[in-house]
Image 1 (cartoon, rainbow, N blue to C red):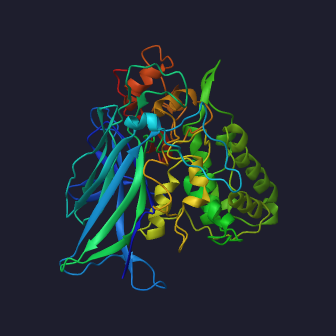
Image 2: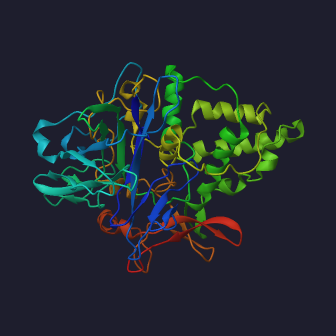
Image 3: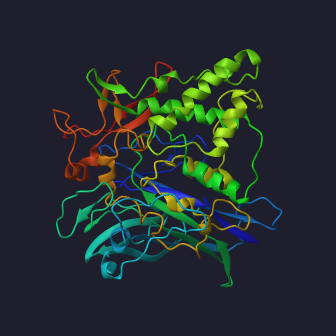
Length: 495
């Protein structure tokens, strides 16, 4: 029996609340909350005290009897149990860092952070922490930064023995006290984002340990705009890499439901998050986002009479590459758009696809990565250019899995902004509105800037962002008058 962990890459998010929800596990789901009566779609991303809930990454064990079989949820022999193990590392302040993030990879090169032995005391390493059983809670995954304790997360298991990885408490500080002067590199600072391997073994009743193919977890900053989606995600970026490297076939054909609808849905969602201040007040950036059609019945027609409309809509959607910084659709996305605009696609639209009843191996990975930022790698949000490095992946039966022998714990987040809040201030405007919103739609229909402090609603300083960002609002999806919208919720009225 072969055992494998899914998702291949899980996404956790830090938060200052003791409460959490489980991140997306099915495509188009926002995640679930655990209640006394079972699992329900997540409704609130803040707790009653206006604190930001953690997003837990849940890992499942799947099995297959032979390589030609599909993976199915593991049905362990009587008396067997799963022993889960995780190591989280934050090495941002313990590596060689330059004044700006790394550029795109050149052919034949690799990208790994370089350790700085003189700064070894700044590497925050939890060591390997293990957990097993049902409804268990581990000791904290914690390390130190120059002797100061830093909690990077904790492990839990649910009632079915599946693993939950929770991130840190959203704490950033400097030692010695140092001002933030850069969007990217601020020595002496640390935060509690991290990443590392997820491993497991199946312990049989006779003591035999069965091997399990492991996964990876990234614990990143909160997603402050869960109602908006990045048009290009890490799933798209890694998928494009896989096609370029020959690990996956180029589909060569385009489905409206599978390939085009998601692009339009994601792009249109940015009207709730991407904007700017103007003489007229806070406005959506360009009229572009509102001009994206959501008439999916019309968009899905192959008729020649709709060619002009399709070409127009293609051009509007492609404008994202000039509206957002360091942004480009993948070649696969461009090819799908071109085929669609020319009418060469499967007109398979029957309505908004329902969320799958049960998670699947591939669906777990896609759902986890769909909620990430796959462009604007200067340096990025959850992970940056290192995820475009073909040398880091497990190539046997490719399934978006990082090869644990080729990457070290902490490598994915090592070259992210230090601390992450520094980039949240400096890179407002046109970078990652799907995670760091520019604007905050209000329930009364007005717009405010998302990053604002005090009655004057002034732009926060770096230190104010470090101190108060977890109190800022969430741009949350809601249905008002039968219309799907996003509004700011959970903002602490004291700031």
